[in-house]
Image (cartoon, rainbow, N blue to C red; front, side, top):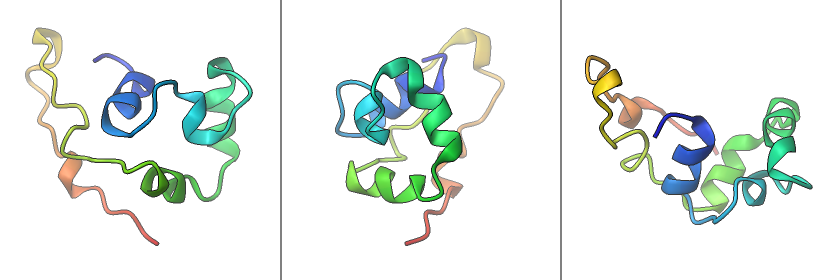
Amino acid sequence: MKNLEDELIRSCDIRQIKELTGSKSNKDFKRDVIKDNSFHKKLLKHNSNFQKFWISSDATYKCINNDAERIKLRN
């Protein structure tokens, strides 16, 4: 995967990225995330699984390690 939206869809229980933030459209997602002070709660609500986050391999990015498990969510 090459963008954040695809990774979030794959690692959460959503079909479209707008479901994560409650945005009116997928296009509004990034704007809404920037304004959201409790985005981490939405990740938890949608069963985010950081074990699935950026694990797909793309030769372009093979030199970058996946340290997603080091991300800590606060309640």
